[in-house]
Length: 274
Image (cartoon, rainbow, N blue to C red):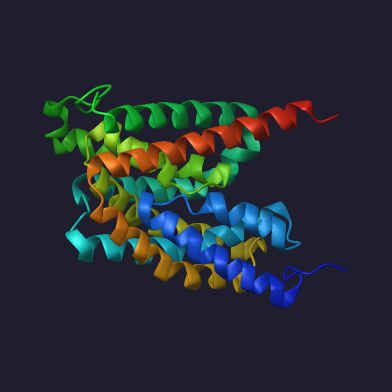
């Protein structure tokens, strides 16, 4: 009979190491630790896929709390003007994620995610090389100055990002950071810190839902979250030390790698018999 723990001592050490590495990634790019947590839990424990995603959500609480605090203390790199609406929307989206996954085509969700990741990779990589694809936010400056537009718009975007991130089981930073930068013109360092802040309540709400329905291992979740915390601080410090172009290149390369990973997963799924 299998248990969540798998091989107790070996898995514990491996998962702790994954937590530390995932924390560095989360702190550096404003989230995204789930892209490491999910496959690691799938590989080193015998949990079901649902419990893997739930456990990763629990771990993300530690990632987001430590990361948002590190960015705030390290440079005040939080934009509450757009972040507050994104936070509210992201929390609501966390509740909608399972509903979205149950009703939408996973293939369609993955294709759209791949398109966003490729656009993000192109944008940040080209910008880092000195030839910006576009220099202004997609939302006009006049509208960005109007709180009656910004608040509801950021809430709607937060709902979409939060629901999509929850449905795909990926760290929200892969979607939230590009949305903050491309739509609202938030500087990349600020976007990373704001993204981490946005997903604190999203992770808490998601963890409560998973705990109630038995789709999370609190033991592994808290182990990942606690070991991720120092890594998140290190990643945030590194992110704040890098200039915008270098950080953009790091994010662009990471987004490209995730796009390639999603394309490979999609091809394998379509090639699988039945």
